Image: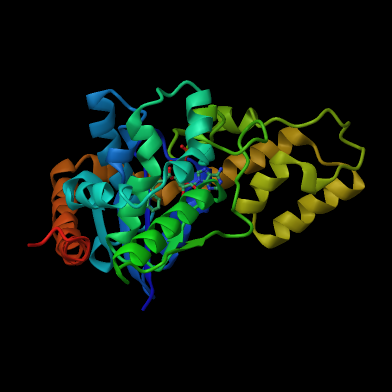
Length: 322
Ligand code: ADP
Ligand code: TRP
């Protein structure tokens, strides 16, 4: 059975890009894989310096996953900082990680360009991510395309450790869905919390409608044909519309008659209905935080037991057992 692992930062509201880029794949693989899902609060600390926001974001991220269908009895589900072993492994790994490898990472450059403080934590972020993955000997890691380079770094670090100290870590592979590799945001760029162009999944109807109405489109008149594959709105409709509906819409684009306002209303209703059940469940879960915390504590115990085995091996290989 393949071991599939992925994490999400509790650094903002869950959006459609997160769902199609990663969460949906994770939840779909619950039955046929050994699944590891976690909330990476230590990574979020690189950009969130507000105690209340980080703590409540962590519980909300847990509720998001469970509301969307993750069953904690069918996977290992925990909060990253509840397994401190990951920090020890990150330190060990950082000694077989070259500066050049980290200097080449786009994510650090992008984030500092956007005003996130250029801290050592942000620079070393990929090493902690490698530790997340290698600590559980994961085979596959579902992520959006923006994380592809971090997965390559994790593999390079594993190879470097294995070459230096002997075969220890499984080499992980990124699992990137072709059609959902990059979900576009309101402005057509990659949908991302840090670009302020997201459609959060769990907005109330009125807010959700407002966001969907803000999807940017061109000014081609309704009756003129348009290329659906160049349209941001169509890319989003593709994620939610059933095949017959999508064929109908595609036809309107190609032959004229696609009115953006109506299509946005359709998109709003599709998104609202798609997540209706999850939205209700999430409210229930957040009203029962004691239970949520208990689920996470139990998950951390499970994860810790697995982490201890790999860490022990890595310590032994590196000469940290005497
Ligand atoms: P954000 O860019 O909004 O901060 P995160 O970095 O928290 O998102 O990403 C969490 C997961 O969701 C990652 O696996 C990431 O690759 C995926 N993801 C984020 N945005 C998108 C997107 N627009 N399209 C596809 N996947 C995405
Ligand atoms: N860097 C990932 C992101 O921003 C989150 C993450 C941290 C992660 N550790 C991970 C993803 C391990 C997969 C596996 O989305």
